[in-house]
Length: 116
Length: 112
Image 1 (tube, helix red, strand yellow):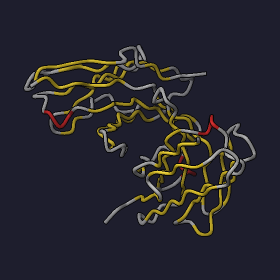
Image 2 (cartoon, each protein chain N blue to C red; image 1 turned 180 degrees about the vertical axis):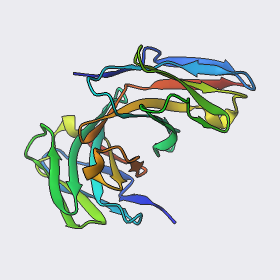
Image 3 (cartoon, rainbow over the protein chains, first blue to last red; image 1 turned 120 degrees about the horizontal axis):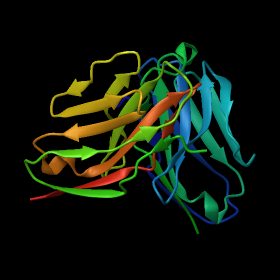
């Protein structure tokens, strides 16, 4: 009964490669997010999608491209990986962004990306 | 700019004792939500407690309670009867606009 799941949990890859992280939620939520947690544990939002439409796009390199095939999925594709991309990436979902983002966000288990 | 501040990078508490984690924030809005999230070694982010700014009553969830001081923009988390399973990173968070802003976290150690 996993609410928000991410795959893979660990991803180790070489610099310059292209990789994807998948996220799925079975909560029936309308909004999904991607966060990046850096080595100092600080969490920063990267993207937010509401019903498959991009709502928030923080300043991230355009090598990062979110893809939302349906409202239960928000995948993160990263091109030309760099050393600085190494981090833990969290997916999250919430019920209704139009209510002002006040609904609690439920997080996935995280994906630790290591770029060598 | 960071608008949620956790001034204690690490804290320790003896098992069965009470500990308070501090959090301050900055916002110009009058209505917002505040959260405490727990991140154990498994890295899963778990919602511990949530507080609605328009409610004066402090939120409680079993052994977890908050001291919400709206005028002071302070939102501390109190953990009573600390248990070994409480050891984790704790993040304070606030919703602003369409997103949630997190503090940098406080790592809590439980001493047996």
